[in-house]
Every structure is written in structure tokens, then in C-alpha cells.
Length: 158
Image 1 (tube, one colour):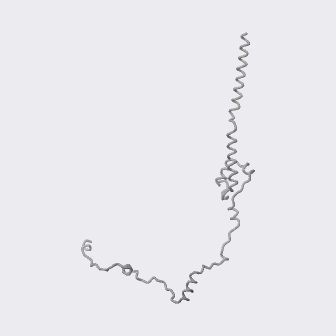
Image 2 (spheres, one colour):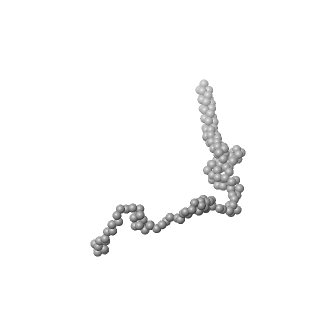
């Protein structure tokens, strides 16, 4: 390897660098030009052939099944349907988990579902807890017993 490096190869002087010189060095001096017609009539005929749209058979074109469009239509739900659904079903309907075939829900139905969920949450939050009513009655009951015992103790002392 050292012997190869020590031998100096003769340097070929190329002169100024030009496009022709680059093509000659790179071996690209081959003609890549397409044949163009010299005659104007031939040129027009060549352009017409080049500019024509591709031909295709209309009978080979597939038609779309109309049922595809039915599945693309948004799902409309009535108020009675929404009222009969549970909260979990309503949430799954909004997220698309309940019916995966339904691509989307109509905007009006989405608003109705959101309103129904909100109404149910407000109703649940406005109901008193089950422990509040018995506690109230227990306080009144023990208060009355205390008052009665107090009155009886006063009557006994006289």
C-alpha cells in the first residue's frame, strides 16, 4: 500500500472548467435530447397526441352503492329515545362506542344528549341526601321528649 501511495500519477491539465468539460469528465456527453419534428405540421400533430386526455371505458367505472351514503348520514335521535337511554348509553352515543356503524351524530341530537345529561346531573344534585330527612325528624322527636321531660320535672317539684 505504501508503494502505491509513493508512486505519483501524472496530472492531466484540463484547462478552464466549462459545461462541455464537465459532461466529458462525467461521461454525460451522450445526447439525451428527444427528437423534435422540424416541420410545423408535424410539430402540431405531435403536440395534439401529447395533449390528449387519457381514454377510459365508462362501462368499466364502478358505481357506488347507495347504501354507503345512508351510512354517512348523521344519526338523528328523538327526545323520547334520549329520555329512555341510561347515562352510560348517552355517553357511549356521544363518543361513538354505542353504535360503531354510525359515523357521526347530528348536531341537534348531540345538543339534546348533552342537555339531558346536564338535566339529570342537576336533578341528582338537587335531591337531598337520604340521611337528611330522618335526621331532621330525629332531632324534632328528641326535642319534644326533652320538653316533655322538662315539663314533668317542673310539675313534680311543685
